Length: 222
Length: 244
Image (cartoon, rainbow over the protein chains, first blue to last red):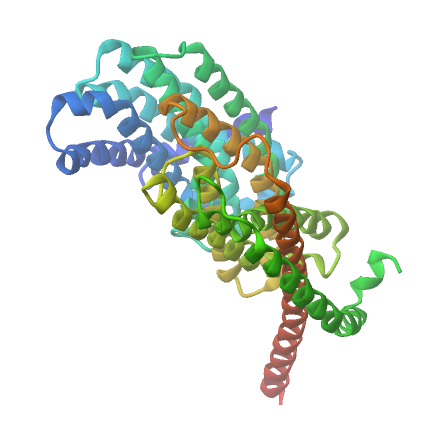
């Protein structure tokens, strides 16, 4: 348990210090949302209607692009080998790293979403719904992305490989995240239906992600 | 002969060399029979001659899905049993699966133009096939980004398994998404039953396509085994040249 906590605290500390990318995700999120009206036009009515979708796409890209260095940085300085050789089961270590990554990049996105929702002329109910669905949904994005991050590290390939591999896997999360946000405002289905499915997807990814990423790292480091 | 006997690539090559000519002949015969049936098949009373696109479209769709299933079994062979030919099978199946999925999308678009009046609709079934196609391309990108086939094979196997878990979920969510966004106005292919006059050629085409897939796949596996041998020989050559 101490090893787990130590790993968690270490990863968060690295992310928050100079050189860590904790705030970069939020900055990217803000930039994407700022760019959207330039492409779509300043029509507030239209922005209100597609606002939840814009926020979700922005959060999706921000949380995946930040994953690039998750294992690669540890691999470069050799600490990944130490973590893999340690007594902590590799799946737990991967899960701890994923949790630390979500706390430093996913959670800020959730906190930033209501502010960005104001830019997009969202109603208070829609803002609440988007923030709630992002809170539940972004862990699924991070933990699915763990697989891509592990693959990129095991193959020593960075760049676009990770999003190309992971983005198709996030289709269900995106569908139910946006659907729940819209359901809260316009219906026709009750908010609970897509929202509980979103919760289920997150729980499933919490299990599958660390196991697949752990297996990848184990295979890749041989 | 157990499947483990095939673990010896030389024996595998010998068997493929013996089987492949017969399989090719069988495929040609099956296509001759099936295409004849397809030409003889009557036009649909609503869709006219365009219904015949289905004779290519449906088998291609079936193979697109079948191929991922085969790659999933190969992935288990790579990760669990360490069967040396499993990742050869998985690697050579991926381009075939992508090609058949592409044929499925293309013929679907050509059929959709006269029938629905548009090349593409965001119908649930079309969309999930498109996502599967993108995943095939991602897998190909992964194979192409690493030189060492063994390492790429294990990584691709994990991604294939994750994809196999995820594809049904994607299918389910896309179905849900579509029914939410669109009324059930999109024309759906086929009524409750298909007339035997069309069904029999369709089944024949499916068998012919599957035979074609198996033949192409065995040939591609043979090429891949030989390609890896060439690679090993080249590496050895480079090593001895440096040592001298």
